[in-house]
Length: 151
Length: 180
Image (spheres, rainbow over the protein chains, first blue to last red):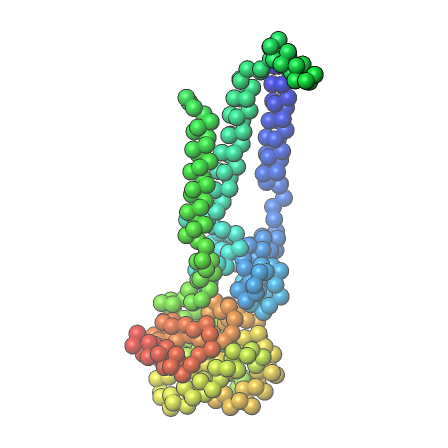
């Protein structure tokens, strides 16, 4: 591989890595109890709505859940404990995002696996294409083309 | 790796097959099937506190020692209207039984509307208000009407997320009495 091309790939890789780390790095601010409660409520499905989260809905049940979640956060419960409490009471369907276990792993994992496999396939394919010798026209080929052109 | 392209192709094929299997097994299954039955079956009656139309405070402790039918309803819900004749007929059959109590908890409705409706319809069983939806939340309700059967020692043994018929209510009460 030529040095300039290696350098370009290196820079591109560095940019991707820095961007990912930047996006994934937790912000320094500690969320308040209300912010945490809102975050948990955003991940819970409003039980008596079709497609709204508890944070978005104004039904009495959604309001009761928001109060309950805030009270649990203020009492020191972790986000996971609160979610587990609601799954126990309402079932898995109360959670808007799939869980990181059981079938949820497949839901998260398969698209990522497909993406990685596809990217790896492209990398190998491009290497293979580069290895294949370029074809050059022989004198006989050139003559054949000329002959056809003037026919 | 001797044939990297072949290995990659195989990996992609495996992912596609796995994805197909997941789709094939999940398509047609209801992702919200757990929303059709109470997750509290077999659990103790949750703590709750409601105020009856007579102004008395009623908690789960007040129901102990009797088989209980709890019905969540309100004045504007059509299915609640549809099940009302069944509730009345069922209650008339069992009202005098000392080991039985029926509690109607108003869900997502104003006190005035519920009070007027209960009086006009002759709902003679205990009716209680739940303005902050705390009882609705404690029972894990998803709407109305919803009906629960509870044993005399306070265990939820049956639930119904649909307008109740008399035979449903009889079966639920029998379950509550059988399980106690």
